[in-house]
Amino acid sequence: MRKRLLTLLALGILLTTAGCAAAAAPAPSATPKKDSLSGSITVFAAASLTKTFGELAAKFEAAHPGVTVATSFAGSADLVSQITAGAPADVFASADTRNMAKVSTLVGTPVNFATNVLEIAVPPGNPAKIATLADLAGPGVKTVVCAPAVPCGAATVTVETASGVKLNPVSEENAVTDVLGKVSSGEADAGLVYVTDVKGAGSSVEGIPFPESGAAVNTYPIATVKAGTHQALATAFVTFVTGAVGRSVLAAAGFGAP
Figure 1: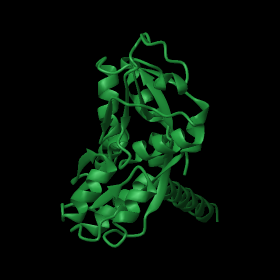
Figure 2: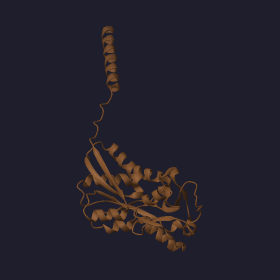
Figure 3: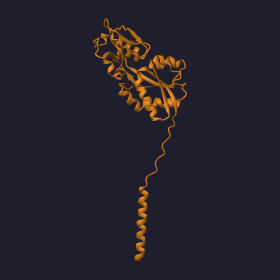
């Protein structure tokens, strides 16, 4: 009897040890999910999105190894002309809804993803001592603005109408980056650009907010281009821009929520 009890006890210990060993064994690792996206796309984006979309393109490529995002930046009106002429774009991001509407038959359903307002940009030290919007209309002040056909120019016209301040610019540019360049180089005493342009320019310019800017808030839409050859990839990029990563990058650059 004693021998039988010892045998059963030994067997119990053996089974318990085996059970613990089985429980401690690591679970097999899950097989990494293969990225279904591949290829390359070309993104046409407003000049005011140059810095943010450059960053978003890099983040998108990092999230999808093997994917390439080429970017082309210009005034929204110029990009509309290029898309209408058949330029090979897969995604279009405009600085206003008006220019997106001009290509409504050539793009998918637009999604609004950001807003922006104007700010006065002056060279470092503000040599012309600009303090208000009305100062830009002062005698001898060299002011540069965007042409009315591009979103920043349309916003300038709206601000002029709402404020009653009539500007006499020495130059009208087709892209907000050109306005910023003339101010930062000292060719102009001041220019009207977006808040995000001033923030992105760092110490090369100084920004002067003005209350009348609230009369012209630009809403930025983004859409896939129907003639694009990589629709799935283009749609994924639009989703990326309008998602959490895109919102974070845009907010850090000073863009408002749509």
